Image 1 (cartoon, rainbow, N blue to C red):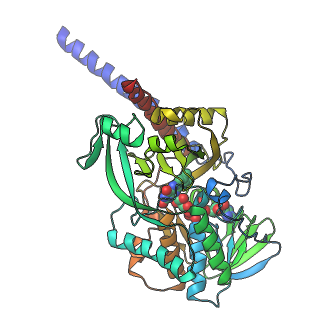
Image 2 (tube, rainbow, N blue to C red; image 1 turned 180 degrees about the vertical axis):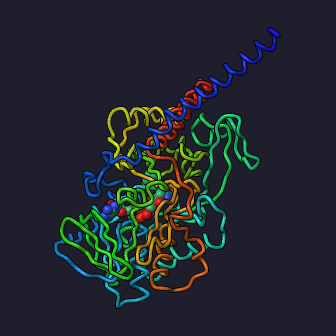
Image 3 (cartoon, rainbow, N blue to C red; image 1 turned 90 degrees about the vertical axis):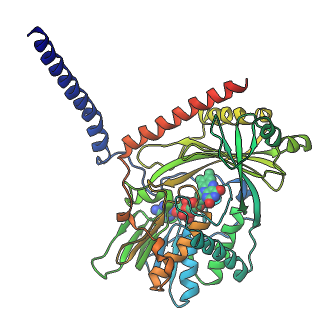
Length: 460
Ligand SMILES: Cc1cc2nc3c(=O)[nH]c(=O)nc-3n(C[C@H](O)[C@H](O)[C@H](O)COP(=O)(O)OP(=O)(O)OC[C@H]3O[C@@H](n4cnc5c(N)ncnc54)[C@H](O)[C@@H]3O)c2cc1C
């Protein structure tokens, strides 16, 4: 009898705990999810201070300046965003149908977003899906663009690229291990490396080439003309884009704003913005260059999803290093590069390459990437006259050009079997609201940094 009573008491206690736990979870989750729907202090397009140019933009002649939108105008197609995607859309529209009036509206300078701030790795592959024939077609299209327009962007093919692993994770196809790897790449941080081949290019030169080709074909380019609001017409009515200098009325509109897209109120629960910092050191001395191993292993990626690091050499023998800063709430696209951000980056760099301690950094910049849950771009038709291509998950140099081409074909009604690659917003899985997403990303970042520190201890 007593036993029975105890059993019943224990069960009701368990029940209460279970309900208390559930209530606690709901108490955290509901406000987090609800906060996303509140009119929070979201940044508005055009509020971002002028972006500092990257190393790539410092090493090409100044791009020609483009006018601002200063009056109302009517065009056939307006493209929002002057990066790799937007410039590719405009170019393929005009090349296929020269009679169209096409305008690109860029918030700051042409290419000043991720397109001029990346690591310049360009391979015939998509992140998130293996579609070798389409990926190769995308890469060939980029090469054909350069040939047809007689442009150069320092494309180097078949560059050995190491994928670096830490801890006990050793891939079956590893080619270098432990001490030997350390000797080859000048870093005691990694346990193994596998090898593939990729290609590299000069992102600044690709932007310059796209700008030149668009001008040549008569595309109207506008800088410092942020689109503040998209006013969709009913049915076949044109779309009105509101900019500080005037309204742009267009039959079709393509949104090519990548990580800035949520600021326009589009794909907010599909695209998450991740922030990165890149540094480029002074040119290395002969000894440092030999120690870095960059001559033989010129580009290196750390294995991982979100928390990854990239290292590459530059043509003038500098050490190029990209690390992840993290995530900010409300789709913010700026990150103050203050003492804290620099210290975090320096710590991570020195853990990996201790001999770089004291080597001066000559270029530094911030950049944003757009992440999706299924690692696939958000691309296609939003409605009858509104198109989108964004969300390349940090691997968009080739895909942005190819998806730009596919969006142009889609607008012009040109059939292409790779239209199957287009996956508009409704085909993507959602990501949790801003605050929940923020906690997840930042929690993951903290965990990975903690793990980093432990790896470092192993070698000291
Ligand atoms: C640090 C870093 C390293 C990377 N490394 C690589 C790499 O090695 N290989 C690779 O393949 N990819 C890499 N990427 C990703 C690659 O750079 C991007 O996927 C690609 O540049 C996306 O091009 P985009 O034109 O879509 O976006 P963006 O270049 O960001 O262009 C979007 C443009 O839209 C403009 N805009 C935004 N809002 C508005 C508005 N409201 N009105 C008007 N204009 C607006 C912005 O100013 C911006 O210029 C990296 C990215 C970063 C940040």
